Image 1 (cartoon, rainbow, N blue to C red):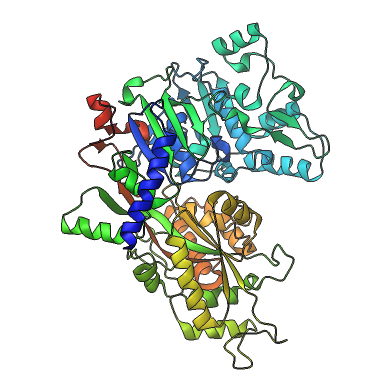
Image 2 (image 1 turned 180 degrees about the vertical axis):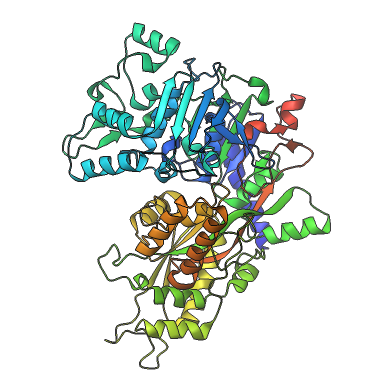
Length: 617
């Protein structure tokens, strides 16, 4: 009966979608579903997979991953040389690379984009990616000090300081040189991430030039003319009181976005869809068989599945319906071949807010590691994957997915142990003092109700949160209040620390344990937990400069053991599975590699091959 109701509801919702996407809307060669809308198309500010998936269509970095084995291949760079001491990279850029407005792609574009990443004003989550570059941290600290002092610094002075301190050099239009503090074996793997893509400075800052100067910029590059003053720019200004660079991000819209990837942004209708078409200036048009790609936003997972089964879309990049386990059972029985599941380079978890006080100003009980350990001990992960997610994902007790990185041994964290959970709570001063089943502190004040934050775009986290509430109440005698929000509000509350416990998931960005463990550094942009431990910070820094790969992995493993046996800033639950839906005889070119990076310009679909624009099969 429930399935019938869901199907009827899905039909009604799909009818609305089809009505909105009327006959006047052109069908794309390849259509897929985004579970939530893209947050930003500014590479420097990206942190979500949905954003980065769009970025790999729009932008081309120096290098990219081969999706079959995730080896590095040249992209905007046609060749790469490395110095004998393995610290200086020289990238020779393609001479035929162009922006979507016809302007040349030059080394100055990469230098500018990386300067933005290393400027605190941009508020990038991935600034730390470039701290391995000589002088990068010193520049970051210099700019941070100026901002803290609210000292007004001109754009020219910021550029001059960057040129003086940071070993990032545009030797000429097509030679880009980067020198690291010490060898980093995964540096190329890091800069293949979308956040290291180039951006077009005149568009980002909103330059307003006369026709003759625009002609020169398009012909020879923006670096050939003086940089305009901020008071003449549309999208950039300097706050006179704080000295902070203030960006307006209107440039990242269809009418103003300038990109250098295989596709350009033709249309973006917020919470409806996004359409990409071929970039006419891309240097290698033969790399893609598609002329157009459309991303449709469908937050309701049942509607998305029904749209796929109705032939309206070619690919679901996440299947989150309550009956996913039934669909997987059908595949195992041989009655369904369009659902695909595989383990990923990712971990599902719930973050503890580790700050000393909550946003309300009240003391935060989760600031105490003993309380955090108690909640981990009180969690039965097997019950979660069997009864909440019903996918039987591999349960994990530490953060780095087991056996995902060659040479790195899995770490064992804290397992389910109700008795140890009660002992840890008691050691933190919380116990049932009057026999009513509720724990109190020494003054008789009950443990505060737990604000558990989760997203509502899928029922997965609702069911997990409900089970966690029951497990924690039964074992620890605490009350939990569930707070479901959409992705935008969730992201805002997570970043501001407006939670006690919050759902999370993390996918590694590159093939090294540090892509997981670095987020526990107190200054990391993805440290949403507010976790801070000077010893962990020091060990992470020590690991970053250790040149012996065996010793380095040993040190990183020691860090993970300490994090998930003593500090436990998060409750890890399971290794994530990825579920896709596509017809294997109609769609090819999607990778099943655990790294989860889809370069959609590589996709081939039956509709673009046959010329049939109908989605009905």
